[in-house]
Length: 241
Image (cartoon, rainbow, N blue to C red):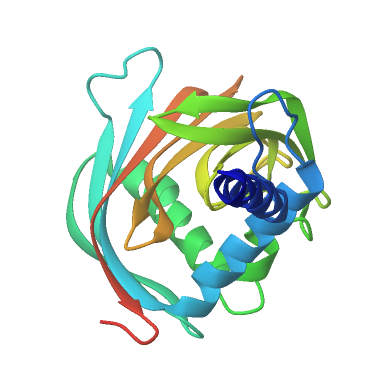
């Protein structure tokens, strides 16, 4: 009986040690913010180091004014990413306003290409190199059925693709689940403040975008909403398929 008690105690101590190392907590304990941030950094590095390439189908829609039922313009593209080269886009279909497609959606894709050029892509990562991260009071929320740590994030530089807001990461592995906030820099002098949200899901063990939404409101252009839905991921992973 004494041996069984000792065995149980050893298992409990081992469980606490693992929880501390991974940044997780037992009931009633506050998460170790610094440990979770290290976990987030490691998850981002693992994604970059192990994904050699991928393809995905992306559907873009633009809504004007208060109507989010009937898009003013739509475009579906095949996104092809290759590590060390960046992204290319092949248009599969498009409809609606030619002006919005040319100066809105195609400009957005051109910006995505620039962001994903080697040497640029690292600046957009949600890591402690690019962001100040502070665990929010309470620290843990359930989101889409996943236990998540919740951080207030503030970019260390200003850019239209860096978000000042909130980040949710999976409590098990530190992978991104959701980001929500405002762009630290407006995309243009005419766009007004841009609110952005992106949701992620686990695809073959890696955090991949599934839905995104950006909303801006300006005196010149009024209210505009862009949504992006991602599907049909095919990943090429190191030492895998």
